[in-house]
Length: 275
Image (cartoon, rainbow, N blue to C red; front, side, top):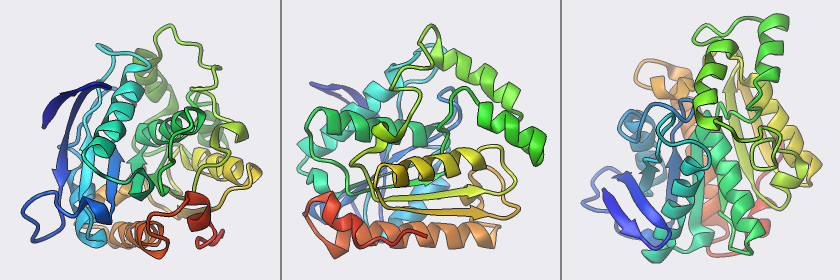
């Protein structure tokens, strides 16, 4: 799907619950999914394994945003496309209070940025955030420290990831508020569900984000899965832990959308217990 909107061009695809013939019943809630891979590769298509399973498990349509990628398009192009996709969903009649934002890796960074941008603009916040292996510290200092103190990531080194991120950042100041998150960034956002693998370099990023949410007075569920790799949820066809993790994420989404339909997100947050 590729449409032009007043907020910009929106590209992406729908993943629908089993048996659905179209993205109907948008009044029951929608997941906006933001894929990862260092802002430089991948797409909605590469992440169908996750989005299709989330659609089936939640019974809700999932819109996977195909944002522009580096190095052709640098910061803040991806964030602008995500904001345009959110605005387009609302324009289609989706209640902004009934959108859950989900994402993995770099998509986690984009999800937090979207929430903070909406809050600062006085817009209605999403019902919640479900993040897998979120990339939070774009300096990768935490990832490098984990590599030295715990173990190397079996999939990707921090130095290689940094080279990919450099294509996205370009001349942007990595210490700017939109790139270096703190407790003020996540104030008023949530609830959050955050999963990461115990064998990946971004496990400390996941813990750091959870700490920021708690410091800001928010609610968060954090789970580090022992021995699992980066975005292991994509391996649900062969990995039992991935299926369990997606089921937990789906349950979180249902709480956000079912327990307090069309209410303020802060009321929903009270239904989600911290670990």
